[in-house]
Length: 430
Image (tube, rainbow, N blue to C red; front, side):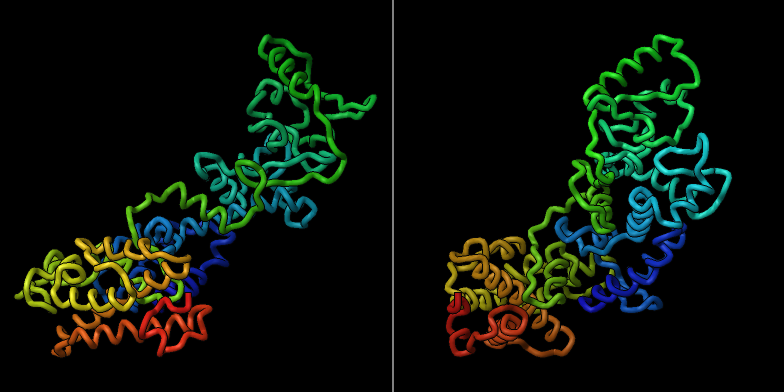
């Protein structure tokens, strides 16, 4: 399953990126691609049908919120399309920007991005998606800001260059009087007597109380405006201090849509992905124990624990209440010089490392050993169920000692650890 998860992230999620970077994918297409991902994750094939043990909405949640970090195709599509909005604002001299401006720009068509609704195509769709897109309660247009230098590349009415909203929305009456809707900031300010003076270009004189009020507000806001004269500098984010990236947009989309799942499991880098995945599933009771199978309407004649043959086999019994497991935990606790391990739930096992005295790596090593012990107990259980092999506590403990040694030596900075010292006390090198 660890290999399949890697293939999903590196291959299945990457294959449609070229298409998704320019076109909005139909809902049916995104659902079909995610169906292929889901089938491959659990069955290893798009043809075989196997039980999906964890809901797809949890699988597509980020790891910090209790998922596997697979990004939804819809979110990838939206994040990639948003890059065109950023590029259009920051690459004004590019040929494609000039073509879009000539085709879609013009009188009355300028907003955040220029668009002629009568011309169908990918640009029209991109603008629609940007209008709909909301990131953490903010429209994407409010996250693309600019610090004015010379004002040549900044649209006076539609870009956010002063305040927190576009001026066309702040002063709609004044915008209606404007002769040149897509004028630049440089076209509306004149350097005079060492200061910048606002130079309007109205169709007619002011004729209503609303217009006079908006004009007074404009003059007050522009009273102390000053520009450096350097090139205009575009910025991204709520504070305007971050650099734009597709990954960051995906993260914002996830923050908007995800619901954090209550979980204790923390991914450990020095142990294999298959062990991490097993612990991730076990914490949610999504491994095929006998009781879990019966809850999913699979007939099991005997639901007693496979290892101790007393008590019903579920996650909590198998790893904390089983007599066989108790013998393994006692041996592992003595080897690691831990206080006697007493756990009433599976989550209690995942918190043992927090009680370890020492630096970060001491806790990481103990956490990894606990996770590997759970995995070794599951392997022993499966050997008895499917191969009719009667496991022994001493054999499981030997596996728990040898596997962490090999993985820590080859997957971390502790390449010089020695077996003769490790088998006595695993934290000797810390």
